[in-house]
Length: 407
Image 1 (cartoon, rainbow, N blue to C red):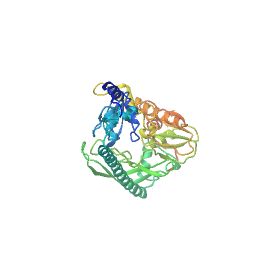
Image 2 (cartoon, rainbow, N blue to C red; image 1 turned 120 degrees about the vertical axis):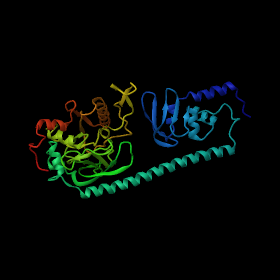
Image 3 (cartoon, one colour; image 1 turned 60 degrees about the horizontal axis):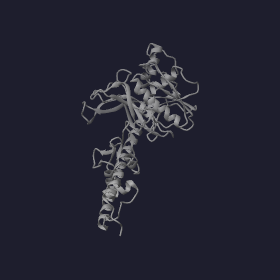
Image 4 (tube, helix red, strand yellow; image 1 turned 45 degrees about the vertical axis):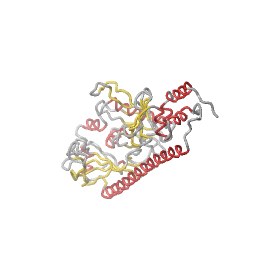
């Protein structure tokens, strides 16, 4: 019969488990996916109840917490919840050593109950995952049908109100660059009617410029819709909620890009929006042989970062530093994925928004491309401007007299 361990031995063994590295223990479970959020905290989906970022581990306080389920406590508590085992079993899991004696082993009935509880929790988790997959599949099908319906109605830009929009912005691109930029004369706009009201209603039917979003294989994954004022060739100022935007994405933008012409070079210039990329090219910058694209927005250009850091200047309402990206790419959350054959990129900065935050995003993009073995260069406009601003300033008349090949 095994010897009965003394209280001091038990206490030391339990304390060893309690002082274990909580982050390493949490990350040892394959369903856990966390990323750093500041110096002491890691966040991500809860391994028990799902979500997006409701679960966190504080390595300074050595505690974990889920805002929804019962994971709230130290490392031993976390293992109890994840394994469905008791306190002593969890200490064994953490320490990787058996308890000081085996006199407190669970009965067959207790073990069966524990395994059944754990199996039920796992089944509930799988059911949630399957339901989420069904929801996403249904949305993807609706988006695909809607994108097809819009593109079936879209026409080339030449001679349309969409071409007038480009001309008003000083843009006179060669037609070979605008094959994926099209026009629809009457596209429904749906948005929030009032600020704070989540219900979406039909607000207007408007002319719109449609830009095709493709993935690295050239497959269509989404469209960017720029709604125009029906009387003047400029972006429409949305009615209703201030959250409404004149640009809307249908389908997917993640990892994709708007291609402006074919893959004619091993160097690709990439801006946030397609108007700015065309403006940069029209201004005559860059090498003679360069292909063009737009990432749709800065977040998709940069991809995810491993965490934030403090803004060097801006403070929030509580006097704390505003958080911006730390410049270190999270390679599990990528931005655009380049087509085959691209060896170098020129990233076209846009400085008409907050400079430090923009630079932090671009640093993430630069480091991510470097990690992929891609050469990177940055093109910066004048402070407070984007490339389309500079094009309009250069022509002075809004580009109306600019030479160019008809679309």
